Amino acid sequence: MKGSCWLYFPEDDCPFYRVTVFSNYSPNNCPQKEAKLKTLQVADPSLNAQADLKSEKEGPYWSLMLEVCQSKMRPVDEPNLIKDSLKGLINTQMIEPNAEIVSIYHRKFDHGYPTPSLERESQLKTLLPALQEKYGIWSRGRFGSYRYEVANQDHSCMIGVEAVDNILFGTPEMTLNEADWVNGGPKQCLLCCATVPVIHILAQ
Image (cartoon, rainbow, N blue to C red):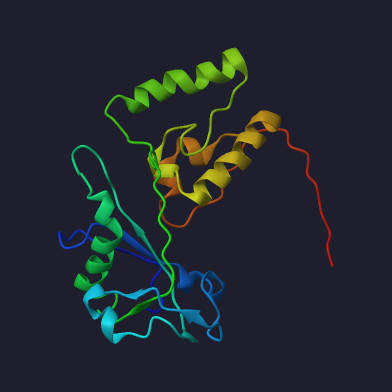
């Protein structure tokens, strides 16, 4: 999995749909190799009797984040979610049955994604301009502008930058309004017709 950032799992033998390998983003996303930690359990609990769960041992360590989707249409066995997730990691060959688990963190978000609908675009074309014109509100971000296709962290940061530029200078908000262009390949420079002061910052 070296070089992998995240992997998707459409299989039925695991509760998660995506695994992010956080330790591949940065070695600081998991304990340093020299850190001595106790093993909480092994991935397959039936092997716990063979494992040393008392001693503190050095790594190396790596970190995985599992994402599980839940709805009325896709129920999740919450009391057994961690156990089922570890089993899913074994089933998908992400970890070995005797892998030593030193830390587990679980958190539930009731709302994590804006869900598109057939009526969404026509409603947004009415609502977003109305909020701006009537109340001076630039409703932006993952839930503010309700556009899943431009709701990643990088999109959200850029939407914020472009909203400020739009407020100050009237420049177009490309990330918000041109998702296909923004998410496409290499970009050509677009000239925006607005009087914008040029600020030069020199740094050594």
